[in-house]
Image 1: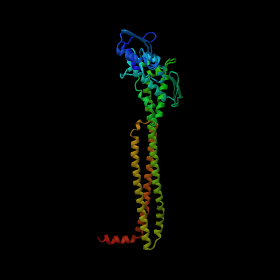
Image 2 (image 1 turned 45 degrees about the horizontal axis):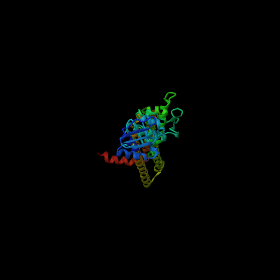
Image 3 (image 1 turned 180 degrees about the horizontal axis):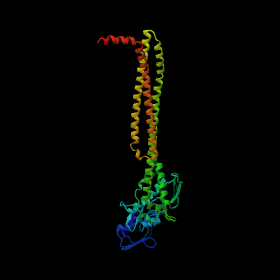
Length: 407
């Protein structure tokens, strides 16, 4: 319906509005003009008011007063629209209006760059209300509260921003507002780090507002002018946060890998220690061997001692292979975690290097212990062998003389 008013205004040649904000016409009538006047006269009052309409032979005249603010209004230019539309400060743009200087109506499909700028600012205001810590709606604006948490020995900051706008928004080139839209969107509510990202943006806005000179009249307009600075500050702080998060993740993964390796190594070592308890029994059997008199006693005892050594060596070899698998698995894990160690913070680098030293020491202790156990495991076999050589020395001597002396 509003387009009927705009069409009538254009049909009579877009005359200048009077001081009272009305336009009039007096001239020869035609069917198309008369039909359009009739449609406009039938419109509800919130589209404007037909002050009078007279039709005489060969002459028709009328005066129409369009709405001067709010929906269905006529504005001289976009500056007048901003000045007369306080709802823009609450992020509520007009849907039906006509700009006389541009001969442009919002109901048309043609895009107007200044109108797009107003729509962008309004959406930004709405998105900021969802990103801010809290919002309080006023008559023609929002009072938004932004704050930062305590960190880096800095006290928390709280800043209140009034979203009143002025015609200067038509000249400010605001880019990359999609970031705020993504942080404000309810669809992204379950995304990881969303609250942290909002907090980082709060901090960037507080930092930008703190940098404004004292007595700044329009803090919101200054914020829009410094929008690029805010985005740069946000991305820098976000990268710092992500790196810190990644470093913390690496630290936990490294600590977990170290813990898992230590646990499995301790388990393997305990298993070895439990089985090596058979070694003292085997060594005691050596005493029995030296007291044996019959051939059966000697044979059984020697075979038992040799079997014990073979079994213990087999156990040690099996556990050694198991430990080698653990070392290989740990090396792969550490290689993935330490390939970018130079990019980590100094404290994390020191932690990783210290953990590697502790693990290498543990590897050395376990390896040395296995070597000692292996030597001890040979003791029953060697003891039995020495006993046989001593006990049957005469027989060995005679056999050697018999088989080698004659040659």
